[in-house]
Image (cartoon, rainbow, N blue to C red; front, side, top):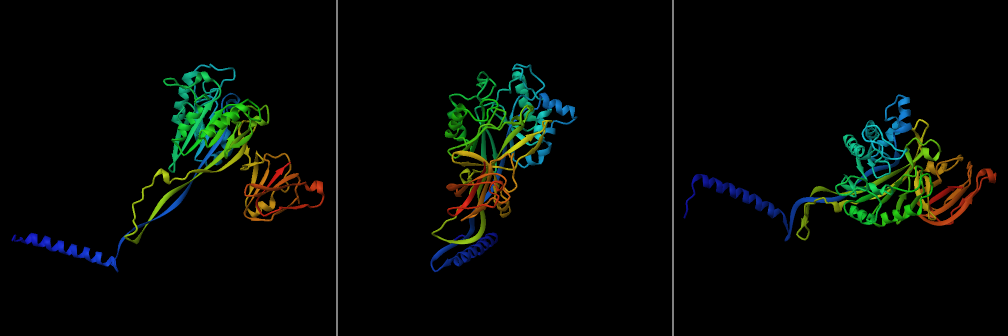
Length: 456
């Protein structure tokens, strides 16, 4: 028998105390033969995040834009000053950069060649325009040297860019990966290739490029520089390319080049904005070229979270530590809105329209004002007179009821659609009070939760 010395006896004594405490706890956890254990219970819940993007059209801040800024003794931020607060509400503002930003290079383009001063990059950054598309027909107007200098000026001002590669620009926010691709349907000889700078062009590999990009991101937005200048309706080639893009994985298609706002379409529940027109440009020869479009995109994501609390479970249940993964993210484009921006003769954005809802009805996209509150429902389109910059109003109600509308103080003729969610269940005319002289009331044939009034 091995005898213990004094130190060993003390160690043995302490071990007995610890073992006794452990056995005591174990005894308390045994109830009627059903083994239980205390643990930190994980309550899983979801936290919402919203990522806000704004897409605008062509930005060209040289030629008469530059001359006007200098004449007024202003800085290059001047064109954006009246909407700065609005621009800064977005996480990302994306524009088409219609020309290089550089003081280098030699003109190699046509007589309509653009080159913006390096200070323009700083102004864009101050205006929160933090991503630009480079795939267009003016970015190489002053050759390779100016193009490379443009990239440096953008990077110096923390402006990201895409369209100079077939790889997507990927930004990650709140765990969501958003990808941007840009393609030009012009200047095919400037195609980017291995070992050669250039721009991404529309080619036979378009579908495969978009498919590969989609594999890397949660949301993919594809921009195209395409179409015919000053045409209000997209041509067949634009429509064909847009459908290829969506079939291949694009979640949204944005277009530019025609210098005016073009029509909007929806394909497989995805929006196609064929042209956003001019955002900052000096084409003051027509009303249409002085109005630009903006697409507000709201991406909603739910992130799986855990909340730890003390609890108890039986041996038939288990609890594992939770680790967040990308699979727990549920990103969707929840809302898309449209705005119009109005340039004044100093090429400054003077004002902008209300936020409009692009809504598909009878295979056509309309731009509607939105009424969601009792005050908005009551006011509707009363006192509205032409000309206006939208197509009508959509009334959204929290429940389905028989609804009645009248033409009191309504000075425009209306076509009214009764909707059960998005299904049309009835349609009728509601003439203006000017025509009927007395108030006319119309009533939905069935309970509805949406009503659309289109101004004729």
